[in-house]
Image 1 (cartoon, rainbow, N blue to C red):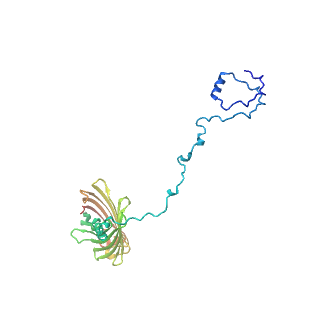
Image 2 (cartoon, rainbow, N blue to C red):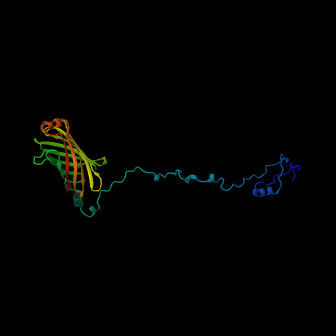
Image 3 (cartoon, rainbow, N blue to C red):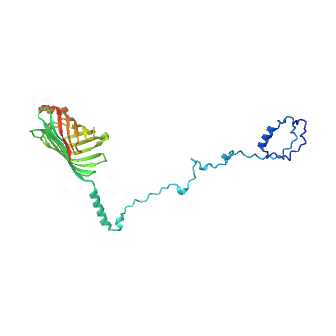
Length: 330
């Protein structure tokens, strides 16, 4: 339809309702009718003051985000109720009463609890022979015995340790007796405090003993002892050993022992400084956990002035020994 000749200047649009036009019908109408040419339409006199421009209905889902309540989204902080805030009140006291005290006399129950603790505390007695061996070396073959008796519990023990060696058919070369109290410092180390008596060689010596014994990292058994004799001489002794369990029953135990003297003691053949170094290795087969035969090798060397004193006495400062013995405890 050609509207080019139509005059729209006097048209009254006040009564025209444009607010509820159906977009779907308009689209269908446009498809069915030819395109209208508005290029020649005169809109100068149009009165739009009475036209209803109601907003079209929002497309579904559009504008929903603006009306949504995001306060419950994850991560949003919730208002804190003062009643729910953590307080700083002190915890209640630990109960120290006993239910039995309400039925029986408290004094009688206190004695009963004390007796129960004393009876259930771990306490035992043991005898341990770590070394009971035959030593074959150049010259006269010899022997060595080392072990300890102890009684007590996990925390405190009374210990009597001994170490002796010599050659067959001769008087013992050395005999050492240690009597000390062992106290657990922590699960791995014990403090030693007591006395040591050297019976051989002559002259005898008595020492005050202070030591630490325990299990170092990597399962290394260590022991360090400080000795001060009744004559004023000071000595140090340190030992380290490690059990290498090849199988459940076969164990190889290397060990190193070092003695140090703070001064010369010529009557004992001891020189100041490093005194004696001993390296050994023993391979044992545990028939049971408390009974194991073993074989091994040991190298012992006197150092410094101690080696010089040994040569003056006609002794060899270095000795290699082949070992065979038993390790047992009961």
